[in-house]
Image 1: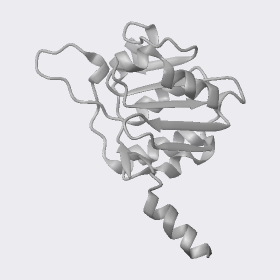
Image 2: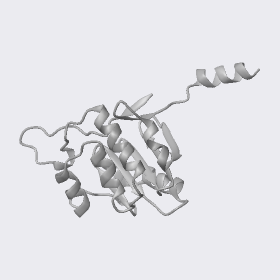
Image 3: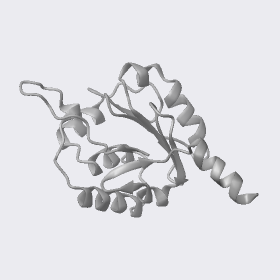
Length: 169
């Protein structure tokens, strides 16, 4: 199991890189913010920033991403937070294709994004790039993939698959 706490590294003294500015939030606060986000009507323009805010990103960092100063995404509807996540809101029914575009994006690799996420407000798909673990669920169900304040990706291991096969025999 791999986890994404959505919180990038804190600034080092003297650093002015606001994309890594965070508000310390505990797991309960993060889970609550994620649940509230999923319950609200889906706003395609606001979702990427509300998602990042739910994990404790400061208003300054979000403002810089919103204005494009620190958003180097090359995917339509995308928001790229360096060393963290590349996410995009897309048209209904094109979540899979948008996730593929995020994965293939040169900006994703250049910014060393660890996660990609695509949603159309009905479906949400995310992937941890290092391990290839994925989440695909209904948009309203994505808070169920947040445990102890971390976005959780599950791996299907060979042993789990073998157990399932032997159980069915």
